Image 1 (cartoon, rainbow, N blue to C red):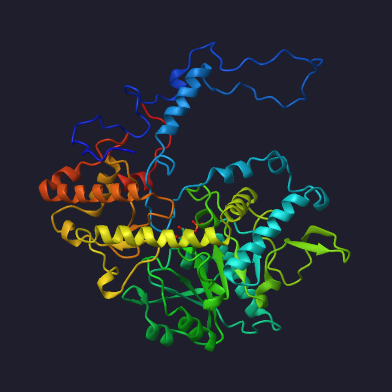
Image 2 (image 1 turned 90 degrees about the horizontal axis):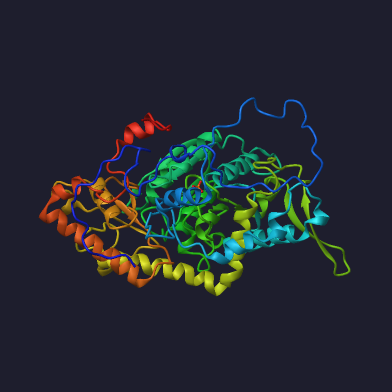
Length: 511
Ligand SMILES: Cc1ncc(COP(=O)(O)O)c(C=O)c1O
């Protein structure tokens, strides 16, 4: 475990992006090149030499650098060590569920029987893979408490988009919802940015529903629904870390005007195995399998965002759908079903993100129903423990055990007293990096907040160390706020001009 001792305010070299050439830093691979050195020896040719076809060769060999095997290994090992990852450090990034990815998932995903498959192979030759896809889709339907699951979407946001397309197809269908005018989607003001973005992608107008004490304001909702409303998208537990106990009432308000309830399932690790969205009124939802059922993720991928729907939405799901066919005499085979005339079509090649779905299968199979329930219970316990330990110095606007207000799998703190001492949220976040901890999500869903999600996979010792570090940083703010202004002192790069990095990124090496 890392030490909790205070990293000093020592002067370190300020490195420019990509120019860390000092000490044990990493030079560019081209700078390590020594002409004539090579990392591999190709074996002698054991077939007759034959000329390659015209136009198959580039005019010049690529400038790849000449480097020996050991230097090559060191180069990439240094680079890999500079990654901040959940395998190396605590990563309480709210809403992102950066939890441990069990290695059994990786073992399953690396099995040659799976990695050697090609998606164009015939169904008859890929029965094991199709069975896995069928099972994961039926397991997810059972977890959702809904009727059918489509595995194709390859991220949470992609699931939102697909589901909204399905909802639209349903309302446009005279034999379905038969209400083509329904083109308005409601979303609470705590919604993840992908919710309104998905609506915009589908050409639906978004109407924001205000929150009261972190939860949906029911009166406001009642005043906003009408016969133009197609659906409401809601995250529950929401991004303030609160489970909205009025969810059944919310569902009724929508259903009473003929609209549907959509669940953004990004926070399913708080309720998986404990409550089923279908039971609290949800008509359609997406899973972020890369969060809830664990897959290494980041920078937008890889992921999977299967959607689960009630039976009246099934006809519109994307094709192909993996189905199980029984021949009447006990024989079973799995197949890809393309015959869905009302389908919205494909949203992704083949049957979705196979490797991620396979990891999801392995995770659910390893946990079983009891294990999944423990996932949710532990995620909620860990978050409540942290919130309770921190709230003396880090105000928790929605967490107040004395008043019976607990959080779900994450919580937000708005550390007003510390910020009043002249530091900013970014100063606090940067100082955490010096202690080897990834900063939590910031300024969302409300300004000046940290959204902290410990996840269910962290030990009590790690949670306690985090509390120690947070308290130590609070003491530093009291004693010397200027110290935080210079943080991080121990990262390869210090404070960057983040606006310039986003707006005007220089991605090539400059001398
Ligand atoms: C609440 C919520 N909804 C939707 C998403 C989008 O999911 P994805 O990143 O898989 O597209 C996220 C991702 O962080 C999220 O936290």
